[in-house]
Image (cartoon, rainbow, N blue to C red; front, side, top):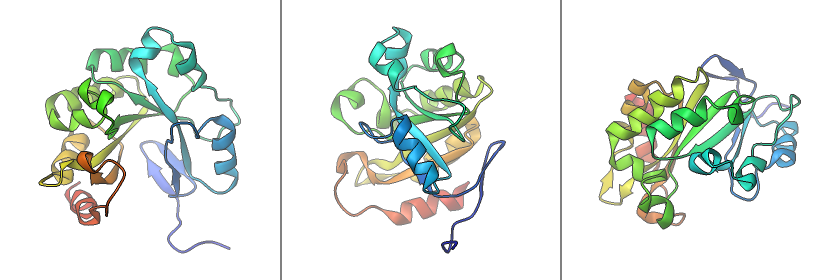
Length: 200
């Protein structure tokens, strides 16, 4: 029985069988979890958030997050980083050669990530964010972006950010409807997602 609204989804050159996607979740979306989600009908699943800087220094714990096999229908890694040069280098590295999709994390709100200029901090610097996207695109892989509705409740700009992502070459944009300041609580701004959808 097919659920209403579930349909194939094209992302870059890939045709996913379903538009129901499993978000990257720290501590959960390991390889066995992703395979279970695929069996249950997910069109796409992402690894946990992987730090480009940690990969650059060949961190073993981060490298373990990249475990995959040819049995995984589509392989999507979520990459965190604020340096366009490092992100491009890791996107083209052997660490990610097995992956079809690079999902750039521009939505993580946690203080240590934000202070380092990564995650949702990239939403404050459109020029650098665009450079990160363009750098990852040079890998030849499909590139998607995860972002937020904005930084603060009085600073929501999902449509503007989505246009930048599209112009820089992103193949898909996923928006968490809360601002960075809301972290994970409060009612999401669904209208901001609508504005972004209408803008690209």
